[in-house]
Length: 193
Ligand SMILES: C[S@@+](CC[C@H](N)C(=O)[O-])C[C@H]1O[C@@H](n2cnc3c(N)ncnc32)[C@H](O)[C@@H]1O
Image 1 (cartoon, rainbow, N blue to C red):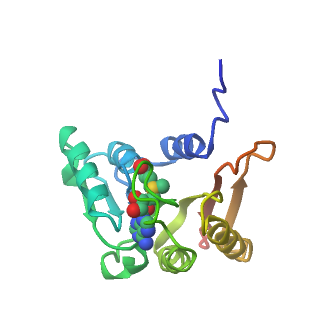
Image 2: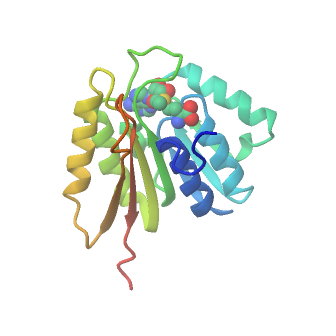
């Protein structure tokens, strides 16, 4: 029998999503890929909620659209075939929850991957849109070319965020070999209280 609770960064992220995202929430998936997170979010926000999703690859949009349609969830999801660094062109609404699963599409073109500069550019635009007590999850991969640089850029940016505005947690499997993904969980403080 394998592990049931601390399996990997993706599963920990899913647990947090299921615990936090409620009906009526506005969520954003910045890296749609095969649509797994988008689909889960679409279920969790319910018919009163909304999910925005970005991916630079049209194949990711098509795969996800098909999955959503099969489950009758397409009306609550807006899929955007563009880089998440241009989020300000598409979204001005405040967000309850944001997720980034960085890197490349599994079983897809490994050359099409997130990059440190556009990822940071996107995160910087998304943070002001996050509601008070809103959450952001970012999974970083260090094993592929450019992955380590991207992780360091994200980690250093998060490390320097003012704790009067944000709390950031790092989930890192410190005894695993082969560069396990590292998950960051960020919460925006409610400055009214
Ligand atoms: C690890 S995959 C995401 C997996 C996805 N969360 C899932 O549930 O299947 C990363 C995705 O990010 C996309 N991507 C790369 N650069 C991007 C960018 N600048 N903006 C938006 N998506 C990007 C890739 O095309 C790829 O589909």
